[in-house]
Structure formats: C-alpha cells, structure tokens
Length: 363
Image (tube, rainbow, N blue to C red; front, side, top):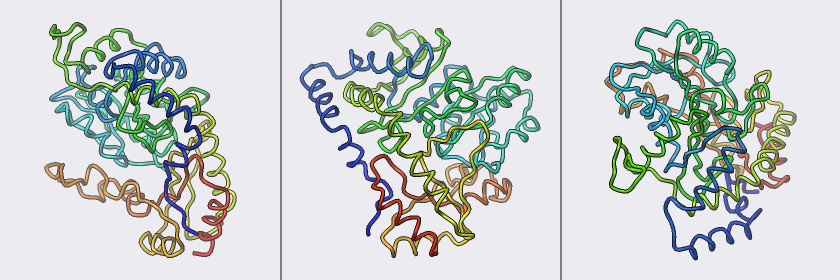
C-alpha cells in the first residue's frame, strides 16, 4: 500500500462542486482584487472567529510582518518568540528590524511559558505565541505576563485554525491573530493567502491601508504600506472551505485519536495534549531517536512522512550573525533532531490509517 503524506486532491473532491462554482463565479465577475468576494470572506471569518475584524492579505508571513509593523515595533525593540518554530514566525520580527528573543520549547512542543519572564527586558515590546502543529500555547499565562509588563501579544495561528484553549479560539486572545491559508493548512486556499483578526478597530483600519500601498483611496497614500492583498479567487475558495472547516478538523482529530490509541511502540514518542487544549492536528508530530532509519523504514513500506522543522530558526544560516549554537536551546534542539510527522489530512482513507498504525508498531 502507498500512503501519501498529504493528498490535496482528496480534500478538493470532498466539496468539488462548491469549489468549482466559486471559481467560475469569480472568473465571470470581471473583478479580481479587493472586491465582494474578499469582503464576504473577511466578514464570514471574523464572525466565525468571534472578532470585530478580519483583514485578508497575501500570505501568513505577510500577516506576521504587518502585525508587528502595525504595532510600531521596529529597530531596538525585542519580541519574545519560541526557539522551536517555523522560520516565518521569526521573519515577521526581523523584517521589521526588531530582535527576536528566543525561549526554549516545553513538553508540548510550544513555547515554555515558565521561561518567558526571565527573558523580558526594558526593550521587550511583544510576545509571539505560536500555536504549532495545531496545538495551543498556555494563553492564560502569556496574557497574564503581557498585562503585568504592558506587552503586545501576537498569535501565530498558521496551523491552529479553530483550535481552542479553555474554550476560546486561538487568535482571539492577543492584540492580533495571524493566519496562513497555505493549501495544506486546516483552512487552505488553492494558492497563497493569509489574514489577520483583531478587535481593535484602529489597528484593522491601519492594516487595511498597509496591505494596499498605505491608502484607503487610490493614489492617496496616507502611510507607508506594501502590496499584500488576498485576491478574489482565493477569498471565494476560502469561503467554501470555511463552511467545512469544523467537519474537516473533526476528520483529522479522529485520525489522530486512532494514532494515539493504536500506536504502541516504545521507539516512538506520541504528541501530548495540554489540559484545556483542543488540538486540531494540522500535523501529527512524533519523536524518535533514529529519525532517518524510521523514515526510511516507513518509505520502504510505502508510507511518506515529513520532518518539521529540522533547523531551528535561531540556527538558520541566514541568521548566522547571531552566532547561536543548537545546544543553546536544548529542548528545541532535541525536538528538531527527532520530529517526524505522520500522514493526517481530511479525506485520508481508514485503511491507510490502519496501515500506518500497523507499520509503525512493527518498527
């Protein structure tokens, strides 16, 4: 049996007629940028998340860059960020010439909130909470620290669409929630797209100008901006996907629950779920001491896997001027050297899930 890591065609086929009708509607409209489809998606997503505003942009990375820029964070400022994350989280900070201050990973593969306070200085302006793999950070403790030290909180929700912490959706705790709609995400476009959500009307207005050359009216550039607009096609397709987000999350959660119940192999450490968290399992990350042998074994049995993320951003070549060593953040380095993601996606057949479990148990 061959098991793909992810098969987006199967997800598309679940709602094929709706996607094709939306795409045809956009093509026939004659209006492809900043139109009714984007307005509709922004209203739907804001309502779904329970926030006042949604601002559609070109990508999740742009959402992060614009988030910090809209908060006035720049040269000389520091932002607390997890040491174990995807590099886009850090790019959002460095593209604004601010300094990321790294905090090690906890047992749940998120930022260790017990180590944040010791890294706060008089230059700290914000905390970036990254809800990695579809799991949630301890937002109650992060928000408490932010209140005590008067810090902004930005949430990177690129992988946690509809995940809950203590009954509240990720992206709705802090000042801004940033989302990626890359095709493989729980709510995925058929291209690049992203968004920010907020309850701050002034920030929302500022972000809408920033994504469109700094203007509300064409040629009237009130502030410095960029070109980062979600197009009408992606907005229309995302509106379809949003209608099915809850059911597709449920599909992935059910697959993950089968993995958690069925995989019994001491060579494989399964993900832990934090009390109070609803994990949506954008990914199913396991840890194993001999990653290369594990992946090779699975591939020999037709099962494709991926690694997230083998080079922590603090050790990335592009940031070599920081001169960090991998061991500077031992838990993040430990995860980076052992993580393997098993297949989990909406539309994955039951027999393939059974086969993955059976094969992993024989490793």
